[in-house]
Image (tube, rainbow, N blue to C red):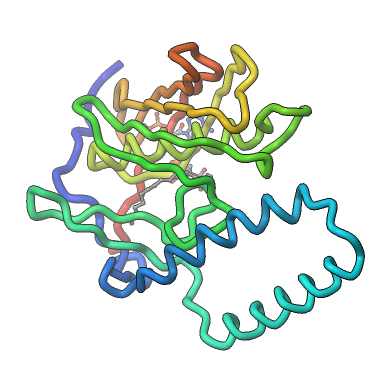
Length: 219
Ligand SMILES: CCCCCCCCCCCCCC(=O)SCCNC(=O)CCNC(=O)[C@H](O)C(C)(C)COP(=O)(O)OP(=O)(O)OC[C@H]1O[C@@H](n2cnc3c(N)ncnc32)[C@H](O)[C@@H]1OP(=O)(O)O
């Protein structure tokens, strides 16, 4: 495989794609608390055995909250800019469904850069259930897709997934710590080849490879 799409040192600036950018200072601590509480709320709703009076009251309360929060909505596509230790900036989609800081639907996935790519730690609650007691395969694929994309971005090559292959080696458990790792394995013109795994207790539950196609900055 030829290597003629060398990593660039700077990620493209989302503003060049017309995307709104926010910084961590723009995000009140209370948003993080609300996101965590709504994340727990979804799990509670999915599993509650409360009676009809309690459910009716909860519905009214949630509806009222939804109306209040909808009064001031952020534009779709907002990117969160985070300073890097080398003076550059990292960007992540604020409402990304797998890892977005402001998205209560996202599992609490904590992602960090490693020497050869990225690592993420996450525990999926019962909201992510597919087969009884196990993680849904679509979410397993979604988490792999995310760390594959993040590994490409961490190497300075932001792209879209053109192809994703997933092998489910063992069931991925709920309510148990999972580790995801991903790295770039090669490049060819705009194509970035990446591979990733999910492990529980050191055992691989799923592995994936992807072809990301690097985005060209408009103009
Ligand atoms: C801005 C800062 C943002 C920071 C965010 C960071 C975090 C990001 C984390 C994100 C994580 C979440 C990730 C997500 O959720 S990404 C969301 C899911 N993915 C998409 O929606 C992508 C939809 N597809 C497309 O838009 C286009 O098809 C793309 C852009 C992919 C290519 O269309 P484009 O017109 O641009 O390119 P091209 O056709 O000239 O092809 C170029 C090269 O690619 C090769 N090729 C094409 N297709 C395939 C294929 N299926 N298998 C293998 N190879 C393929 C092709 O042969 C050629 O190779 P070569 O001829 O050079 O050999």
